[in-house]
Length: 104
Image 1 (tube, rainbow, N blue to C red):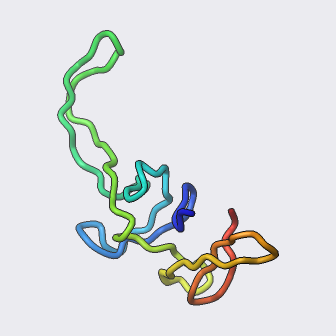
Image 2: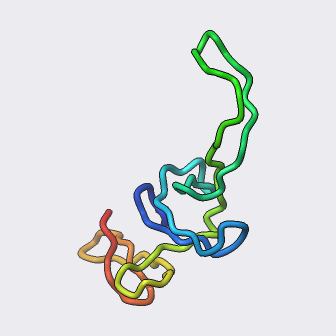
């Protein structure tokens, strides 16, 4: 079970974008995820008339490792780790600092 999922609001802990908040757009694989507004790079793109792409310099969101982000707790306004607990025979995600459950 992944502790960070699509749609979660996260806070970047390390790197160039430290302290920036964003929403997880998707998971690239088990370790990397795309976060909205984080790790944006300039990419030089060739034109492709078959796809209708115009060439030039475009902004592209690159993946970031999940160890560099933490879930943002709206109650406290701080990042929090996530624990997985069993409630009524189901696995639920729980914030460690406050103990509140996350929506699945």
